Image (cartoon, rainbow, N blue to C red):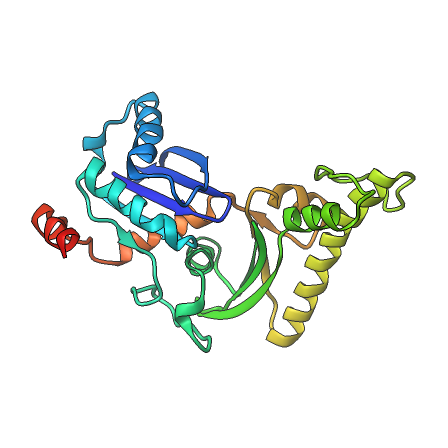
Length: 269
């Protein structure tokens, strides 16, 4: 079975795929200083709950936008599952061209979303990821990655609004029934929610004009269903898109060789 680990700025997601379906998907808050043993305590308990054992894992793949977490996640795979993980990076075989000025600058999550979007939904496509940042990634009809847009995530905007304006409270995210708020909290909720709907629709409209061809609109990230309710522009929501990208990337590339002797030698250097 394949252990898939997606380490984002907010959460680390671990999942196990048996070749046909996901056997479990679990989340923990991202903490760059969390050790491999701490990850193991968390993950082994959840594997046991799903009737899985460490010996069931024979391959692993990691995608991360948090470089500080990579060492501990790699040690998790080596020490607890006796496997050398494949690390998602631009130099691997993605099966498509990365048509940006510097491919190494593109976050692994964005390339993984592009891979999964093309394989699962076809193209051309715009993938909107409602994460810590809200990203828009353009995937061509041939699967090529054309770049995109990075905007502040909605939670960052809420926190910035609360901190910068002393009299404005911290609010939760929800879909207001009306645009015109008849109180401070309602007005803030409207500005955040409908403001982001406007941001999404406005940027997609400009992307479509610049790209010059019809584009499917696919959303992922924890808040994707909420914003899909407010905009008919979003055609598909797939909360496991990045995980599918990792699974597909692992299938395209040779499995790294696990060697305890090589690991000991590397660690001692």
